[in-house]
Structure formats: structure tokens, C-alpha cells
Length: 185
Image 1 (cartoon, rainbow, N blue to C red):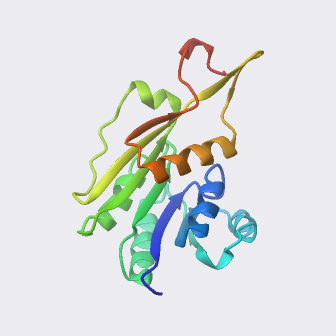
Image 2 (cartoon, rainbow, N blue to C red; image 1 turned 90 degrees about the horizontal axis):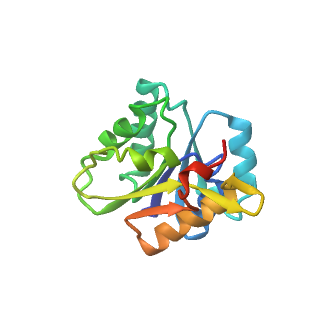
Image 3 (cartoon, helix red, strand yellow; image 1 turned 60 degrees about the horizontal axis):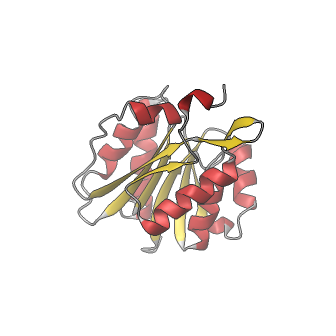
């Protein structure tokens, strides 16, 4: 594989699908960590550049398989990713750190877009990252409407994350977190 821009997206067959398509449009080879082959293939086929969207079939809850698959992908591409966009549920507390261990040796600057749920905004976890990593944090809020509030749509999330990538925002809330008492239940 040539020295194209290389990204890994976790959450790309769901709410980050639009991010995968945009990255492929921007010339990235997009490697998507996923558990469901049919869902991945459907997402890939919706892309205007399906040959730039690649599969990393692994459940990120399986630490050993995740580490092995990410390492194999990096070896296949020939260099570490230029960008990682990560939406990992709290049920896999080791997943992001295992992925970051695999890119720890990269000396060229690269970015991590760490997508987190709304309640994480109030906890502000410390995420240790490799030296060459520009860490960017995105919190997913909600939308206030006349009848109350609702969670963000996949399109709103993808649009917000693309904006973060384009403008290199360090910390962003997509939607709102205020008033917290009005969030959807």
C-alpha cells in the first residue's frame, strides 16, 4: 500500500459513518474497527470511494485480538495512522490504551479525536497519549427543542467531528450540555 494518509475509525459502522466517508473523500485510507461484516460492507458500499474503506474485523472488548489486529493493520499499511477517531464504550476500558500502545513509536505528529458521551464532560478523565499525538476531545451533548430535548443524530455527530478535524479544535461539545437537567432520559 502506498504512503497515503491513514486513519483508524472506531465507531465507523454506526454514528461515525459520515466521518469515514468524508475521510475517504479527503484521500485517507480509512480502516474501520467493527464487529459486524454485513454492516461494514453496507457502510463501505455507500461510500463514493469504497476502495479506500477497509475492514478491521474485531470486537474491541477482546484485548488480545484488538492489539493483534491493529498491529497487523499497521504492518500492512507500512506506517502508523495519521489520525485515529475513537468512539469506544465504557464497557471496554482497555481498548483505547491498547490501540495507542501500537502507535506509541510514531515520531511524526498525528491526531487522536477522542469521542466521549455527555456525562464524561463532568469527569474529565486523564487519557495518556504518545508523545507525537495531538489529543483532541469531543463530547456528545444533546439538542434542545420546543418539546424538550433529544440526543444528537448520527449526521449531527459526524458533521461536528468533521468540523473538529478541519479546524483542529482541542476540546469541543457537539450540541449542548446545558441545562444538564433537561437532557433526554
